Amino acid sequence: MRKLIFGMNLTLDGYIAAAGDDIGWSGPPSDELFRWWLDQELASGVTLYGRKLWEAMSSHWPTGDQRPGATPAVIEFARNWRDTPKVVFSSTLDRVDQVDGNTRLVTGDAIAEITRLKAEDGAPMRVGGATLAGAAVRAGLVDEYQIVTHPVLVGGGTPFFTALDSWVNLNLVETRTFPGGAVLTRYEPRR
Image (tube, rainbow, N blue to C red; front, side):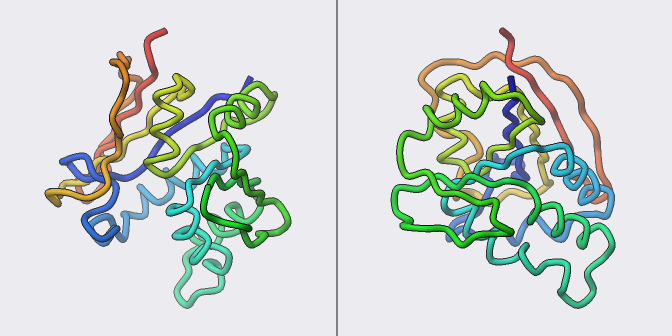
């Protein structure tokens, strides 16, 4: 059975994007933090995207390794991003552009599809995007939370956690501080 991981950068006041979908507060990350995210991506077997995050990632990473000044870590991230199978969940998209032939669109029941994918053998899956991840959290499908909190307050925007139907008690697995003050906290649900 696959593990499902929900991890993103967020502000100290809990937002993954400020008003207007602005993520300018988050970057560029330190080399150490970028490498940590790269290691997480390298360990992933499938990435699940909501529409908004898919549109952001697919507008940059297909050619991220060809951009001027791309570091070895950025080149490795872009190549891995293209190679990793991706599932995009959206009720508004009619199609997704293929990235090396390993991207597919799901327009139906996201929870049923995530449950099906989790039941397969393989490397962990990552879920990104607050709405899609929120549905997975409410369904009890998330096995690990990777929260990288940046020392900034934005006062509003897209929250990391959406409304929950009930409490989710967590166990702290790891904490780590990166240059620039970003702090990783990893949690697993108490089962």
